[in-house]
Amino acid sequence: MATRLPVTQRYSAVAIAFHWTIAVLVIVNLIVGIGHDAVPALRAWMPGHKAIGITVLALTLARVAWRLAHRPPPLPGFVPAWERGVAHATHWTLYALMLAMPLSGWAMVSGPQGRRPLSWFGITDLPYLPVDASGASAGHEVHEILGWVMLALVLIHVAAALRHHLILRDSVLLRMLPRAAR
Ligand code: HEM
Ligand code: HEM
Image (cartoon, rainbow, N blue to C red; front, side, top):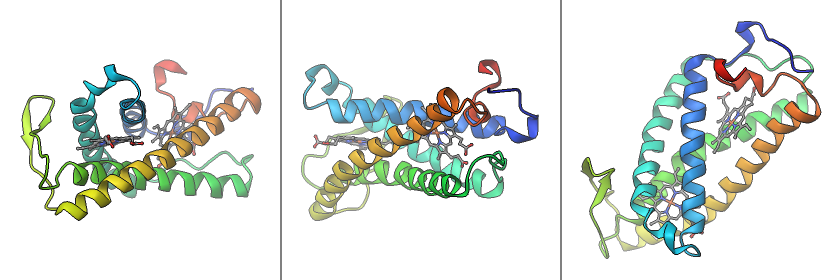
């Protein structure tokens, strides 16, 4: 059964704040990105999709810099070695996607044709990336393919967290929950 953990075995408040802020923004962007073709109402959200995506890029750069200087608490001893390996690989692939998705999206909208002002929530206009038409179309291709890869990995990641919490009933998800939710 999930039990109280000593403070040292939990992720720190900074890690938890980064995790959940970025998770919510990425989930919104996956839904809006995948849905915007089929659901006309979501098309109006595309300027927000772009601004959220660039926010994710900035937050992820800060998170990775912070993470490289702060080791996470070790996984509980009952987690088998294979699962530690898979978790580690999944987490670093997610970090890579949190950088690659915004960068490829930004490249896609930076091509010389069809540029529109790239507004960050109406507060300021962002610059374009220095790419030509073929760079923009490569960005488009990468953005579409990695979007599906990211959706799949996020679903696996969430399923793994829920398996720990609901089936194995151990403390793995609690390590990442904000204090108020524990
Ligand atoms: C966390 C970051 C992001 C995620 C997870 C994300 C995800 C997605 C996904 C899943 C799609 C649908 C791909 C498809 O057509 O199947 C999409 C489309 C799109 N994204 Fe993003 N995106 C992100 C950031 C950005 C950024 C920063 C920009 C531009 C500045 C952008 C611009 C676009 C555009 C223009 C489309 C529509 C492409 C089309 O209609 O073919 N995205 N996004
Ligand atoms: C788009 C959404 C998400 C992304 C991109 C994401 C990304 C990540 C990353 C990169 C880590 C590794 C942290 C580190 O040690 O450096 C992590 C850890 C974790 N995530 Fe997520 N996450 C997402 C959503 C979720 C959701 C919805 C849940 C819960 C249902 C969840 C549960 C966890 C847990 C429990 C850990 C800690 C695992 C451990 O102790 O090793 N995540 N997440």
